[in-house]
Length: 438
Image (cartoon, rainbow, N blue to C red; front, side, top):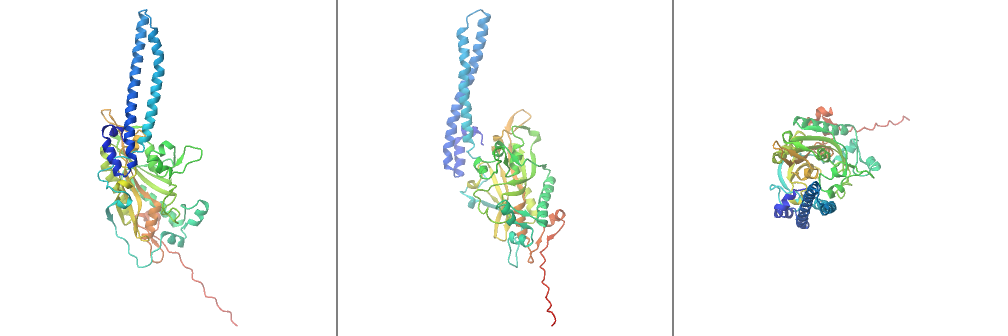
């Protein structure tokens, strides 16, 4: 959530930001917070005053007793004060909770570089890289290719788990692991620290990464327990430093994590479509950074460069799209998607997402940094996909298919796969039946 000081000192800035996101229904929240905050500050001042009065009366009682004077009136007042203080403290706690719940609904301040737009149709293309392959034969989608090669079974997984799951077999399963190993080595060379995170988090931790509504539509929860399957390692990496104060000299903390991820994808278009493009379960390598506020802009560029490096090493034609204000998540300051070209759809499809969340996420979990002057600030957080194997598998297979049904493997993966191509299935020729002699 944003700093409440922004609402106290510049409510117009916060309202103008909400207008950019095309969320007029949230404008009233700013006024509501301002009103409740004034009530809270008044109540807090009253509580502080009463505590001061309690200390003063206690001193007067001690002095009266030492002097042998009657202190009955002071004692009576001293007995009444704790209840008055308790009632006001209850009021301040109630106001704090009410303010926090509203603050969680107010979006992060948006970057000046974010294009203004109503929805994803107004996202802005930044640049393209790579050559789009040309085919002299009818292209097949990844499902057709994989089923012909007997490398995936989507029908069996649908029977035992439902749509959005899969069985990967033989060379395809090895290729999936090769992508993970390649990305881990790639990120280690960038001097990021490798973490393997919990796959389940409690409610407080999992809801800190984005708005509650977005997560409730995507998270699988354990019945009867405060445990939820992660939709991305970002959630677990963010929660790792909950309620901690990090030394500024130890920042930035650059992490990357491999994990399985699980998402309901409620309302997602095409979840019932067969294949690997949109699934409930997938493998992902995530980048995550905790940094000083003044460093998050340059680290955003660094994370972007990392993702480009992965896609270029895999020789995939891609473009980078700047997310517009209307399509930007409420917890984000700035965001970009990496999209790879698919010859089967003749369109670019998202495979990675980069976000600078400034101090919005960290404030929810009270993650701060401390400088040499003993001054505290809320840290900034950034996250970026390094690899989501299911979608990268789709783009690799469809862009590298050959006329005979085989699939070429990018050179960067050869040492991890042990093979340079997935060979086409051999078609057995039926033997001619000899006619018996008469």
